[in-house]
Image (cartoon, rainbow, N blue to C red; front, side):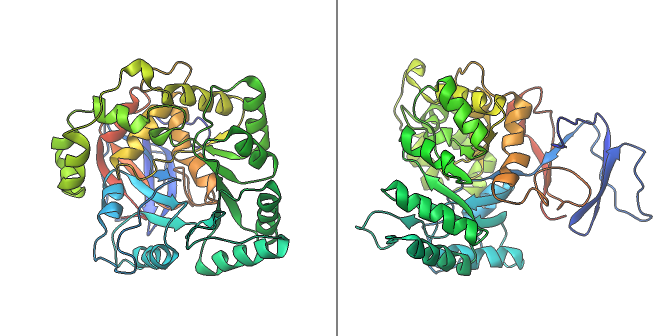
Length: 381
């Protein structure tokens, strides 16, 4: 259920409208008369996956399709909620409303909108010379509909601190891009950021582990594009040789996209990959009481979230990685908490929104079973 370490061997879940009305041991839950029943005998039910670094945009630029394939692919693979930490404001908030209104199929869509960028050579440069400038930028994104804003490479620590204060004043969550700079990431953890995006690029010693863990800042490592060496994405294209011909992937992902990545790619000696070292550091932060969450970076819509999940659980040879249960927590309840939705999402509990996946096999026994979805339920449907 992701309520602590609770696992029910046989359970009943009752859904009324779009909320979970009750969950408990089989036969001990009150079921309303006339309820429609689904038999999940032999299946495993987990909460819907939440991708907290999901790039789904930079495509139509105000031309809204009836179906956005990136949305459909994620939902088909059990990703029921996403947070995009860098997306065109003019696209993402309107399309999120279309999903909520039932006009477009997809997961729940949340976003920072345009990042608050520190580089001047760009049309999304956010000039911040004092606290009042930071407040103006935060209020601007809040008015668009952002719940968590993204500070991207503001070069001076003073600027990042102004953003932290402005976000607190406006009751906004705040994440940032570290760009593989360990010192920058650690200062953001010290300075009160809700989260930072991407990997700490080196093997972590105990001082860094304890600092990140005790700060309470969410660490979203995006192992699929991990800094410090060849990306996890390259490892999976190299090892998951059946991806090109997978019927589900071919249904939801354009053929040209798959051809580009599966028919020709670099071969890298497995010992060269660095993401397992990063995954070890992620586990150390989590085991020290810190917060980690899943983010698949939009490298491969839908299936990429599972690759990220598997990497967090030790795929690629990492020793001391997250256990399957801990990795699933990072993809569900902890991910919900990062983006401020733990009261409504991330676990199978009475009162929460009815987002869950019915799997044909148990991912606690083999994390790769996360892919074996029989049904995806989002918002009670």
